[in-house]
Every structure is written in C-alpha cells, then in structure tokens.
Image 1: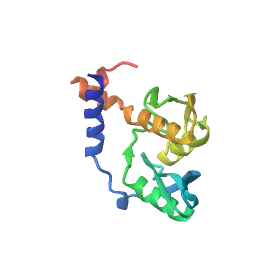
Image 2 (image 1 turned 180 degrees about the vertical axis):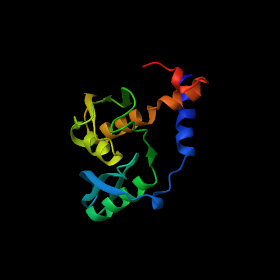
Image 3 (image 1 turned 120 degrees about the vertical axis):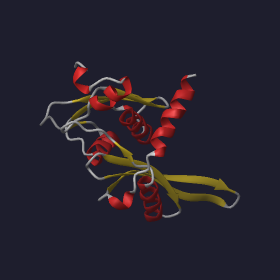
Image 4 (image 1 turned 90 degrees about the horizontal axis):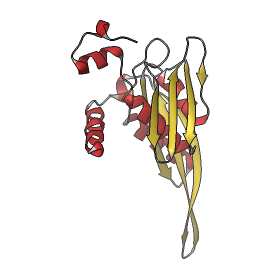
Amino acid sequence: MASNSRKKEDNQHMASFIDPNQLDLEDQVVAINRVTKVVKGGRRLRFAAIAIVGDKNGHVGFATGKAQEVPEAIRKAVDAAKKSLIEVPIVGTTIPHEVIGHFGAGEVLLKPAEEGSGVAAGGAIRSVMELAGIADITSKSLGRNTPINMIRATMDGLTQLRTREQVAELRGVSASSLED
C-alpha cells in the first residue's frame, strides 16, 4: 500500500517538468568510473560519469552517462541531468524542515541550519546542496556512502520538503494557524 502512495507522489513530481532552457544552469561532475566488460577478445573499457546540474536558485537535477570516452560520458550525464530537474523549496538560505532521504542502503539526514553556518556536508551531498542554492544546512550520511546512492537519497529528501504554505494548503487551513 505504501508503494502505491510513493508511486503517486513520484508521478506528481514528474508532471511538473522544469524547462532547462529557461534556467542558467551550472554543472558539476561528481564521479567518473572506469567500467570493464570481459569479452572473447579481451576487456572492453567504458566510462560512467555522474553529473549534477543546478541554477543555485532552487532547481537541481542529476544523472549518469556512459560512453567509451570520458568527455562523451560527461556530456551525456549533463544532458540527462537537465531533463531530471526538481524544484527545492528554500526558506531564506536553508530548507524548511528536517528530513531523511532514503535510497538503497544509503540514508541522508538533512537539517536546516542557522544563517551563516554554511554547508556542513561532504562529497556528493555538498555538490547537490550548492547547486540547489542551499547555503546553510547540516547533513549526516547514514548507511552506505557510494556517491550515486548519496545523491539519490539526497534528492529523495529534497523531494519530500514542503513549505509552511504547502502544508497548510494540503491540510486545508491557513498558514498562520500552523505552529512551529
């Protein structure tokens, strides 16, 4: 039953397509892996790249690209990431509330932080936060910390975020009636 509600939630996010051509996007390559396939004649080398794109103003996306050359893998990853943009609610310079994102064996705890405290996150999580435009946040990696799992868990957490106004609308009450 829980999986059905998750699918509906994912479909809602898919319905709101963000046009990458209208945004000033920056990209960052997080990881490049060399992958080999053993065939009859020997080993076949390919490369897999993970890229994150964002406008530093509440829009961020990620994707992987695979090719026989590194630049081509990066280009494919960036192009695919532009198609997977999500909108992140930002309150001031941080996120509206604490959230835990899950993917596979990886979990990411994201906590709002005081203004001026900076991004307390490591590796791939830091890249996602900076390109999303979140300047003050504390994060903790729980479980496995492979870059792709951390990015996917972080993006899962970011899609769960709701502003006070969104929560009030879902509950059918005014935003001022919600308490902290």
